[in-house]
Image (cartoon, rainbow, N blue to C red):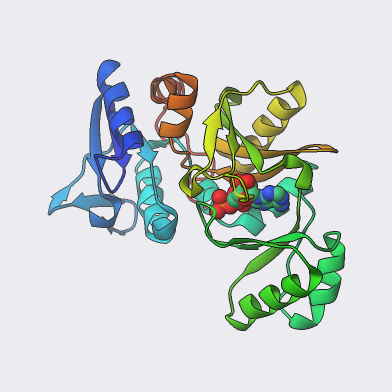
Length: 301
Ligand code: ADP
């Protein structure tokens, strides 16, 4: 198969591993820098161009679109979808997953366990917002932050009020969330491929830090998850419409809570922690599922 990998850098671990896995399984991978791809939007004949050339349609496209380029990246992916390429994850599902509040709204509608979360525009709502999530300590998150940046733990009600006020004053979109203390600075990353959890790892924050992101110095270890955790991760990926997802769970007294569903999960941490060939499993999924014009949403809504 001719497979396009939408990535800005061939040298990134995940991109390298996907290229390797394609080659090992007899496919032809082409890495396209999504910001250098451009589109001809004409009735009935969508095209993607790259360095002056019109690209032949690919049988499959693997999007590895960074959060900061979601808008342009998903537009290019949508164009491929309209040309009939099979996207590993669909453009609409990626856009959904990039907005933390939208994701939580979709998950809550289907009864998935979540930390209680509030969202407001007007500072008048602050006292009630704080009450809604069980008071301080609480977590304040920028809706479009990644890698733990823009996630703040406010230890007291006073601190929470002033941080929320400051963010609102800056016109930043934030949500306020119940702090899951019993998670003990750890979360569980579940790698889901096509309705199966294929790998899991526990990420533990550094002492004195509550954010367990590997980019914030967190460390990864193996963990066995419960059937309830497994079912929650699969359900979350499915609700988001993602074939491949990194679902982050917090272990709470009331069971697994979904914190985030990532549409471009990094492969390095999880492959190194588990010794599993995740890149190979992703390509195998494409082999089994790629059919022309099989996009569920066809770029709609
Ligand atoms: P990002 O998308 O920037 O990684 P997250 O929402 O995943 O943001 O939060 C970063 C980290 O902070 C998580 O991995 C987790 O360890 C910790 N964390 C986030 N929300 C909560 C919460 N409500 N309770 C306890 N810990 C949390």
